[in-house]
Length: 237
Image (cartoon, rainbow, N blue to C red; front, side, top):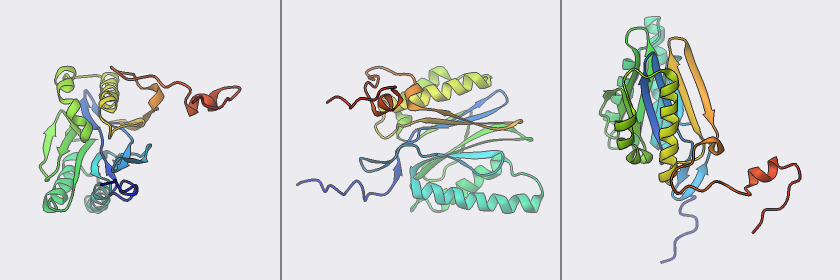
């Protein structure tokens, strides 16, 4: 039977994804790729999968794009009400437990895995993994999405306690780029968010600046090369 040409275009949006959260000595760093797909079709190659909940708490979203977005919207609303009632920012644990509550109570309908990360004055930097089903796990690092299958052994070897911010940033970028190299559902650029006592810092790593790994071929005569050339020439066939 011939494959319907529109099947992928009309498929639900899914963030077959690589998401990472790492604690370091002073805060946390979240990282993610940027590919959103519908079946085999790449619907968005530069999506932002790291979503702000409060000034000090962010989440990484994987799985169904619609499901993860509605969960983050609800939790952001609840945390806003919580902050008004208490007169102070919500802790990372409170935010993570709200995500857990929604994910668990709707586990038969939601298909999303989430990593919650942030910093608060009570416990410092914290990472919580909330996979499919609504389990909550506090971890020194968490990985999720389709690309995470390629990273468990890497993190067992590379992660260490008490890392500096620079070491943690390099680890997150390296991990996401490794997953992009192997996982067809991960790709695009790498985005990171650093959260500590000083605030939040976002970083962006374009695809052409990521390291190449085994069997990866460097792009030649691409559209970007043509646009950046002083005398553009047609792409060769």
